[in-house]
Image 1 (cartoon, rainbow, N blue to C red):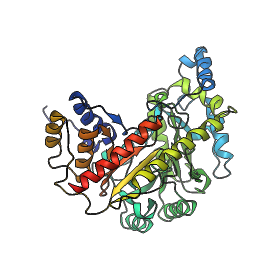
Image 2: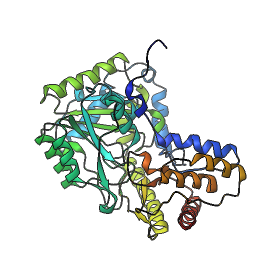
Image 3: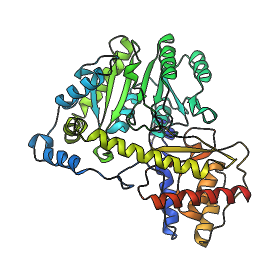
Image 4: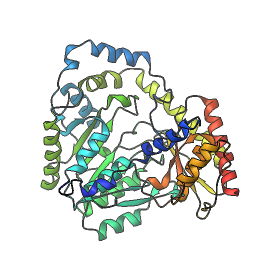
Length: 432
């Protein structure tokens, strides 16, 4: 090329949740049978989709309008339904004009960060969800800006660190929360949410609340939506149906804008996001049309409660199987369907390895672990030796070392095998 053609922030676009698949595929070619514990697709892991839900979608597919464009902001009847749900929370009030549909929350995330000034920074939690951290780092052409979630304190945010980073970095314009959190499974307590809102008000910031897992809670937890506590602070809530129904293939998510008219700069950002969607015409029509019928169905709450209880039980298996290993920090999870297991400082060392029966897999992993983070070394050895595919925590913009698993395996026997095998692998690796 006659000149550079790549945006400087493109090097920040990483997604280890998918990148680990490339590594696993290499081992699979060498005869290793893979157990996929890396990606949060409930359908892929066998979650049953009830017939009544399929019937709603099938009925809508017989309507001609489900094949056409819808209004740019989204199907009006669905936006009316969603605005009533948000307003019923009793906090901030919105109208249909405050809702914008996107092709999944991933699309929504990219829209929000893409139109921020390159010098404006959004500070988000670490361990970080890769789509947010990559989009934030990419727009700023710098490493993502984060605040620490503390594994020694139930994964709650280090509020002193967050406060200091906001105070001493005038480029921070917004605070991201993911509630319930991916990858830790933490649910933000109400006092901490209110403290974050107060911090945003004090420094004239806005809040981004990724609430894709809002109704996936258990162990007595309830995720408070940001609309309930935001008061007069500008905010963007990100919501969708991929995890809660679940229907990840729908690629159907939306943004809710709160207090957008209270700040002229925030209002400009909202307008830019809406204008960008207008250039695309609209998001997919059929899934939008399905939302009111599915969420208002008399069996939906029962369906979601059963799925949540199953996730809780799987989390209990992880805690029971790995929780007593002294070198690990294993917290109980309360939301979403992930669990992050952390190695205590000094537990991992650069010489550790696992015995591998497959000679080709052994040769491959020994090349793969050269110069990588210590938790990646562990993850790659586990892949080669057991076929279990998990995601290293260092890949989530974190200086912690560990791995993330999903809590989605419907086959209870296979789940028991996975975590017993992980326990044995951890013991062997640490002792080597």
